[in-house]
Image 1 (tube, one colour):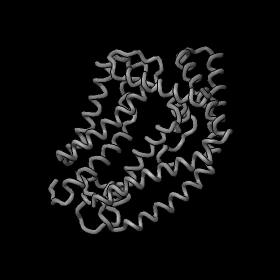
Image 2 (tube, each protein chain N blue to C red):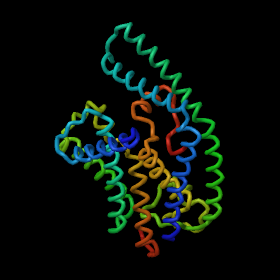
Image 3 (tube, rainbow over the protein chains, first blue to last red):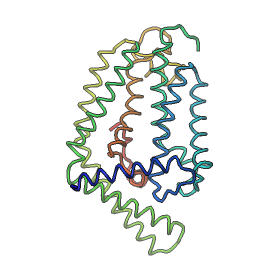
Image 4 (cartoon, each protein chain N blue to C red):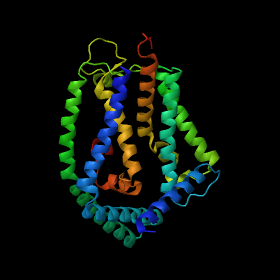
Length: 128
Length: 183
């Protein structure tokens, strides 16, 4: 096997282990970056899923934005403290974890929410 | 309206890939950049560990060592930014031209309906060049910026071109780098 394909193979295996660890309670995270990456991608997924739901319902106005922030932060807080039981001080406090990937996730949420809302309810005259 | 918004998402995916592709050709694949990046990341991690270990100690020797390393990291960060700068300017110009082209295509067109009333200082962007006073009408530029913010950063991270957290943490404190989405 060539070096390049070995590298790709290793990367694939690493990815698989991270996936498994992400869904396992109290997993060990010797590499902080790996855990923060899981939080980052989880946030992106939450953003898109919430955007999809808010658009389908449809949820409108400031309430939608506020609910996104609350649900997003609550899910991450629950995941870090209850599911993985991580010592947040190791990562510079809960605030650092809460900030991880928030803006990107917020932008992703807005895009999904706006597009689904436009597609389903855009032509209606809606009062917000 | 829906086809316009989907088209904008598609455009921003394409421009994000194009931008990263161009940056890869001009910057990421060059030996100088790769060497500097590895060096900056190694130094940032080392410095972070050292700061964690001797953060509050008043030992002069340690302080001096940390200062010396910070200085070295600062220089490497500056070199890294210089390597990036030239091509970033070229890409910046190309994208400004591309953006103004799209802007004129979608000029005055409502591309989406916002599910919320934007606050006053965002209205200038979300209602740019649109007639009428329904502020839930969304202009091209607002949706494009949002798409770019989410898509470009995720693509950068997916392709492994985003700077590591340790480097951006140290780099941010020493040499303020521009946010990734505006490069």
